[in-house]
Image 1 (cartoon, rainbow, N blue to C red):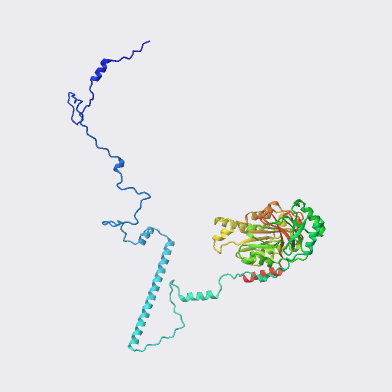
Image 2 (tube, rainbow, N blue to C red; image 1 turned 90 degrees about the vertical axis):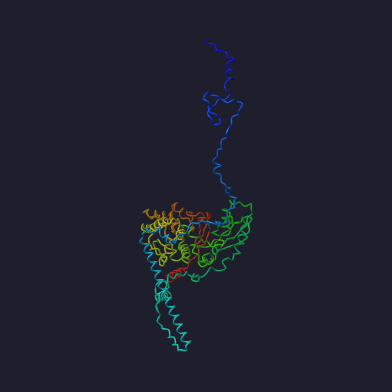
Amino acid sequence: MTRRKKREFNKERHEQDMNKEAFKFPLDIDGTDSSDDGAIQPLDTPPAYVRRPQRETKYKTHKPSVKRPTRMTISKARQVPSAVYGLNKPKRSDRDEREIYLEKFKNYNSVIVDKIVEERMQREKRKDKQKQKEQQKRAELAALKKKRDAQKANGEIVKAKAEPKNKQHDTLSVLGSKQNKLREKQQAATGKRIGPNVTQPGVSILGTAQAADYKAPDNNLAKQIDDAFDKLNVEGRVTGYTSNGVIGRYEVKLNRAFRVSNIPRLNTALKAELGLDELRIMSPLIGTSNIGLEVPLAEVRPITFRTLFEASSLKLRKPDYKFAVGKTVDDKIFSYELSKAGHILIYGNQPNYDTNVIDNIMLSLLMNHSAHELKVAVAAADDTYDDYLDVPHSFGRRMAPDDPETMKIFLTELNERSVQFRRAHVRNIQSYNSRVKFESKKATLVIIIDDLAAIIENKNSEPLRGLVQILKQGKPLGIHVIANNMNTDQNIRYELLQLLQTKIAFYDAENKAVSGTDELTQGNDALAVIPTSNKPNRISVGTVNKNVRQSVFDHIKHNNR
């Protein structure tokens, strides 16, 4: 094992290092070469350093002489012209701007453009020719006037003006056509009416209105109701009355402690006490905590179509496709828009009122809409609705509802509208009609199906499939179905009940379509359900006289040509 040598201070080496040159440089600092023998200047004399020139930085060389503009710098409002160069704008070309613009189309060839240019040139030539003729005529008239003035001044006899001839001189107009031809066209236009002669039926042909005393209450029945509550030991008094002429409603104020669950028992007890077979309790009345006793009137005041038309917004004659069916018990008009109602189901019609609902709906639409706006199609086995096919609003002939060809015609119209709406990038008939011309607008199509049970009972499933497709897609395309189902023994599928959004149900003991129809009276008493409300409304359907309906049809046929 070698032992590491101890580090010691070498005095001799230190002295040698101290005696060495303090500074050694191969060249003299002042620019002269050093001597060959390596003589070095003494350390006492300081070298003459020459300071190098300061290097110019990039910032200094490109530093702007003027302060940079900021967002706070105020610029000149206008260009100040130089005393020598002026505004120094580029010189304008001697060529016209039109010539420069037409250079772009120098090598462009088009038959259509050439034809347009040729027609324009011919039109300009005709205008120039007409101007020349007018100027020439003015010059001749001025020369003739000057000659006559000179003759008058000289005392010469001036010939009187000749009487104007009946013949009209042909003069060219600015458009190049003769004025006599234009005059003949104007006379022909004034003598012949252009366009269809369309007038809406008047209110005077709608017959008589409802009797004015339909709101009078039956005081004897009101007193009997108070006595019945006293005998039943129920705290209740009649506080109000309202009626629509068919059904009367007595508003009864009960004790707050009376339970709602006891209302069915109260209904049974009141029927027995008052001797009424038909009594319906409405609980509670909207806006109050009272109940309403709805009783059919002994002396009925029929609700006529004229009353529905005059008391509703139909009298404003707006093209909003609104229809009126009847009155509610609180004497309000039940009206609704067809575009919102969608498809309508009329369920359980009575024999005496089988056409009143459809007549009210269709007459409401025919009174305010022309044949260009509304079309009516009938699918029925009998001639009940043939009168609607004898007007300009008719859409084809009457066909049987269970015939497969019937639904094919409607499906063809449905598919055509769907394709046209898709090409126009719209989804409903309102948007489509707002984008196209008057001639291309689509009319709202109403399909009346007299007996829905015939389609359901049919063994062939094609008509039913077509009906389902129309019910699914028809509403936004402007196709609406009014289905009448009088056979309550035949059950309607749940799918059809859901697609038929608006339901008007008459008396039905089993409540198959609308719940609560078992409490209705026999006749034109019905419950109506609309898409915007889940609670059915009790309405009394208006009656339509056959003479009134025929008067409306006659007016439409003779005044819409």
